[in-house]
Length: 249
Image (cartoon, rainbow, N blue to C red; front, side, top):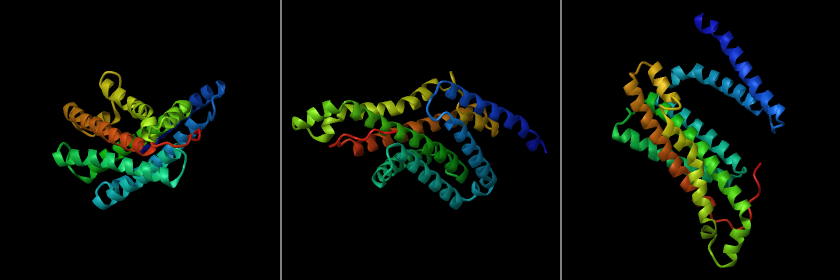
């Protein structure tokens, strides 16, 4: 009864926050002003569904593997759409993300930093996959924008006989770094500006602040490693540009 009693204030707060975001964007005539509100509604529906099945999933290694596979597939498709949908883009994004996520999770569980249990595999895997998706999308879009804006320079390099990879080398390096900036800033300010969700969740789950902090730093390091590998591999696949890219919406 208590859980349902808490629902009305939650719905009121979420509804007001959605209204604020929509009103601010609409008042400023920003494109797609309803996008944040729709994203919240979709996220709420997805969280409700996940909450109902999580109890059964988290106790089974097989179901955890299925859940992670579904998360990864959705993440890869979402990032690929941000780069302009195409099977080749999907293959590049999925391959880059898979390498980054695998490197991070193998290191964490192989060293024993976190116990290799279904519960921790699902929690850490979901966090790393989600962040890798965002980094892949940022890296790809930043590279595309840089090449489009500086196409005359790229074309000049190509005319002088430079390889497509060399002609876009500076743009590729900057795109990788730009994609990592949000994660770098989050890591640098952890504990000073924000208390990350994994840290707060671990405390609410009964861990001591020291253990929660240990878990959080492993999570942050995993995100940085997975994101670095993901961005670097994706941009290496995108970098050999021979024709001017189409502008992304």
